[in-house]
Length: 276
Image (spheres, rainbow, N blue to C red):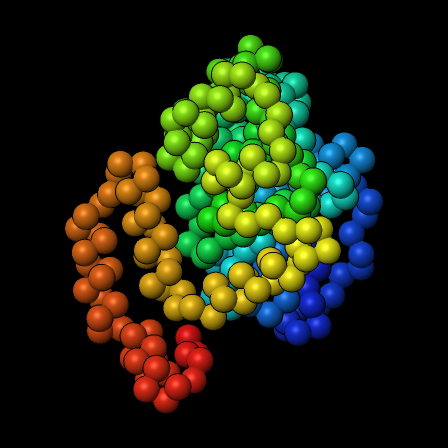
C-alpha cells in the first residue's frame, strides 16, 4: 500500500500491523465495512506534504476497489483535523517535476478524487480545519465537528488565488455570500458559525464525537451501495451543473431490475433490516 500505514481490525481477514508511528503519511484502518483514514502528523497539526497527497490517492484507490467497504471516515490525529497543505513543499516538487509551481494543483486532484469516491464519506472534525484542508473536508459527503473546532481560509492574506474546483465546492455547498465571506475576509469562524452556514452537518461535544460518527457510519454502511453510489454521483453532477442525464436515467432503470431493490422490498415485507 505504498508509503501509507495500514491497520486492519481483527474483524477483517487481513493482518494487523503495529501502532502507527508518531508522524507518518495517512493511516488506513479497516473495521468491518468501515474504512478510516487518519491524517497523522500531529506535531504539525496534520499539515499535508507531497508524500501525504500521494498516499491519500493510493488509499482512495484501495478503498474504492474493496467491495467489502461501504463507508469512509476521514479524520486527524491530535488536536487539529489539518492545517492544510504545505505551499512551499508542494510548489517545490511541482517546479522540480518541470510543471508550473502551482501548489494548489496537486491538492486539487486529491480533493476532487475524494469528492468523486463511489462510497459515502464522513469527515470527523476532531479540531481546527485550516487552508486547503477546509476543501478536503467539504469534499466529503458529511462533516461532523466537535465543539471547539474552527475553520480559517487564509488565501486572501497569502496572495493566493484558490483553485477553481475548490471555490466551486464552497459556492455549491455554502452559497455565494458565505463563500465570499470566508475567502475574501480570511476571517476565522467558530464551530457554531460553521454549523449555521452549513459547513458542518452536525456539531457535538467532543465526548460524543465518536458516537455520532459511528451512528452515521452504521446507517450509511447498511444502505444499498450501488443505489447510493449512483445517487451520490448524480447529486455531485447537479451541484457542478454537469449532470449526465442519460447515465442517471439508465442507473434509475437498472435499479428497478437489480438485486438491491429485490432485497429492499423483501426486507420491508419481512420487517427486518436489509442485507445488501
